[in-house]
Amino acid sequence: MPPNFLHIRDALKVFAGATIVQDQRHIKPMHQHVALRLVLEGGFLPDEITPHPPLSASKRAGAWSLEFAPDLETSSELTVFGGMKTKQIDVVAAKEGVGPVLAVSIKGTFRAYRNLVNRMEEAIGDSTNVHVMYPGLVYGFLSLIRANRQSDGYSANDMGISADGTVSPQIQRYYAALCEMTGRKFVRNDYTRYEAVALVLVENSQSVAGEVCHEFPPSDMSLRLESFFRRLFEVYDLRFPLRADHIATVKRVSWRKTSPAIREIENQFSAPIGNVLGYVPRLDD
Image (tube, rainbow, N blue to C red; front, top):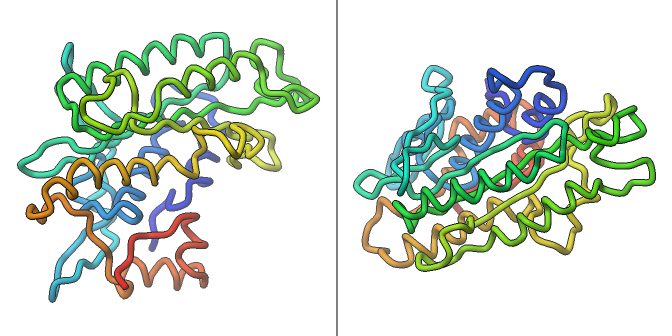
């Protein structure tokens, strides 16, 4: 049976409908989605990912195969050393003999968007702290915000999108600040920047709960979810396999098209796997 949260909309639907945030149940599904995606789309081995996704990998005749393994799934976070303090990061890929190589921090905001400035300050501090210790770490920041449309009765303080479709000034200012925090490419670049940042407005009106609001950020601008993972993988390949192609363990793998997990997904949904997942997995030719 394929696991939950293969598609991002299922994780976002939990986020959109949550009423309690203290126990992280509103955001944990996104951790699980990202962990699965780092394996399926990113080509990292399941044992390299924390939290461990419900997958196992094996190599036969030179090809890698994936199987679903629900007993292996965890919800833990990896603690990494920072320049100033240790830091628990939501999803981390670590290579044996190298250490953490790619990580994603995921934050969610429900309301009181005037406090987004605090979220921005935290994000800058986290990136700096981690990059001081690991300049080569490919670090992504994924910020989820509930759209909270005025037409659904939200007050001015908690409103994300006004009745005329305008995004709140607080979110627009936050977006402008995040644009200055993304795009880190080389290891000597500014430590305060992330390699990739995505801002996702999540619809929470009952009929479309969990859908991504495609009106913002603008389609021709940065911070779009569509380019977030691609950017992480591109920078990873530039930092690691390109510079050490003789070290096989740092290369991202491709999965056999006939892997039990791939077949199970396609059989369960009777559709091409890319349509089911919402992204293209890293499969062999």
